[in-house]
Image 1 (cartoon, rainbow, N blue to C red):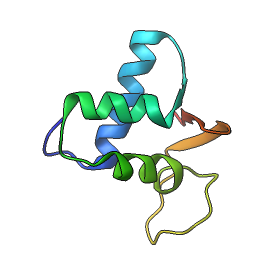
Image 2 (cartoon, rainbow, N blue to C red):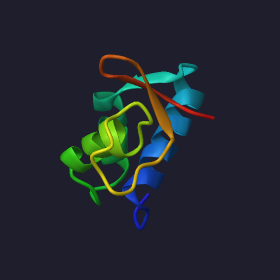
Image 3 (cartoon, rainbow, N blue to C red):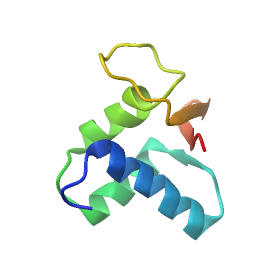
Length: 82
């Protein structure tokens, strides 16, 4: 996963976890743990910020660049938009 953007690493985490668990919804902690188990290129706070706001279409628009990659399913639970 090194040399990827945080966005790439997070989306890869979702895809890998979907395949390995058969689930589609994941917590920020699950995604963060997966990414950090593969690389030390990102801080957990960076991963959490990306999941909660930069990649989530439901989040308030607090960043200049926002992606429509994830949706909030319930409090603290996210799903990849495919």
